[in-house]
Amino acid sequence: MFTLYITDQAKQQLNTLKSDRGLNKRYKAVKKALYLLAENPRHKSLQTHEFTSLKGPKGEKVFEAYAEQATASAYRIFWCYGPDKDQITILAVTKHP
Image 1 (cartoon, rainbow, N blue to C red):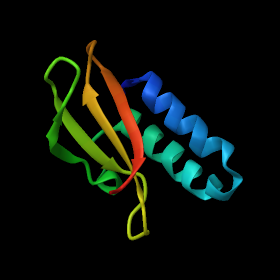
Image 2 (cartoon, helix red, strand yellow):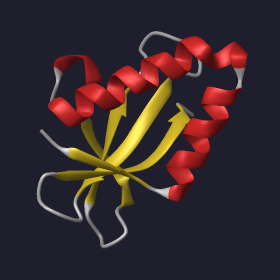
Image 3 (spheres, rainbow, N blue to C red):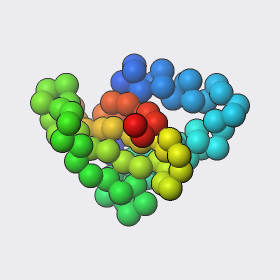
């Protein structure tokens, strides 16, 4: 099991998502995905894969996990391992471009 460290940017994105009543269903999907990510970053429903266009704060590999699928503007979670062992840093929670 991993501990999630959420960056200020990701916290702001989560708070924006949480505060918009029209996005309640999406917020719940993101919360579930974060739970699954902490349990097992390779959980099948997350469809986790490396996102080669970005690097982490210290040059780490960045991964993308799906919070939603087959949905217009589906939400994605961008993350990397670390900085400590058994820790995942959530870099961003955004709509798929």
